Image 1 (cartoon, rainbow, N blue to C red):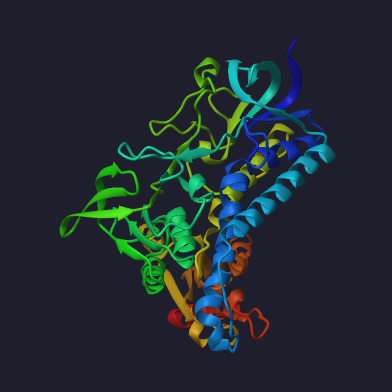
Image 2: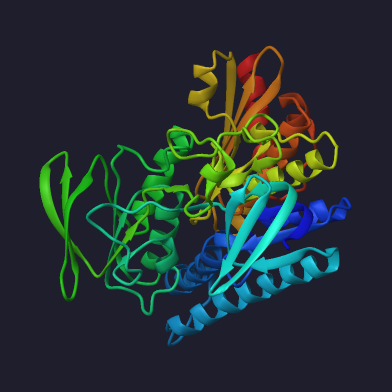
Length: 463
């Protein structure tokens, strides 16, 4: 006999485990099914958390190696203990994984390890090795996330041709590394290994990096990363590849013709796609889009009303915190509540050094939407706190709509951008005006004062 639940969540990542916990808190008997032995999904196990750990540690190493002396700190016999760095990363992941397991226990969420597949619209078969179990649920939430996209000529072996997963677990720092794709994952991991001493070349089909970001942000970030020693081949694509005994040879076609590039490790970071393999969506009658995303309505329902989908499985930006918001929303919808997810107020961050953070519309998007906008910027080189801590690269850019005085976008390149963008998120969520932001008192000296100054600039532009 199958185990019966009110809610079955398939996937234990930031969308799935949050949905499961919220459903249980609302009094629904809930099980979370995930094929990994550990909870947390891609984000916690092989994504957000390990990458940000390595970004932090490598930034510290680079600071001590290149910049500390300017502040009067002399480092003797500085050396890199790469295995120790990786051990710390694994310890942090384990601690957080154990924390989720504790939350499941505390909220009485059942955890079932295995790969789930539909037998019928209400029935799932869960396979773990030779063991099979059946789960029957009144409501099912699909939160299986996404997987890296491979290139036909570069099959992942996670040693020499790596996805982000393999790049986070290399045995040593490569001498030469090629990164295909200059999106968020590409520039973050390129930054890690450049700081640790690798010679890194990033290959990008477009003529700019991080295409989702505001153009002014993208242009500045490119200059900063090039200054840090990263090489970029823009408007270029890999047209051939050969894996040799000691290196990988790439044929790259760019504006000036075709050239050969050799690398010890090649990171393929050209994007991710929804992971639906083995789910048996056809047996449940669930429809997908032409791009492979699960098709849902405005309430996250698939065409089978009791089955929902969230996170990377559905159209939209692939962000862990977006999936979490949707997970909470679906659990509350099932419980009869009326939540909302404000996609305009979901921030996007790139954890390079300096960081990049944004919320709302870019200047280009605002103009394309026909808005009559006002734009204000404030450079961190004029910010007292930035000067104190030696982090003067970057700016805050505020975009507002003139007639309503409403904030419609905020973009930051600078130290701690991931933290101070929270002010922009709250402003977007509460429909704050440019005038309110400009007149709000900010502690001095702080990096966030540049938000106030940028808002003041928008008011000058309006007058």
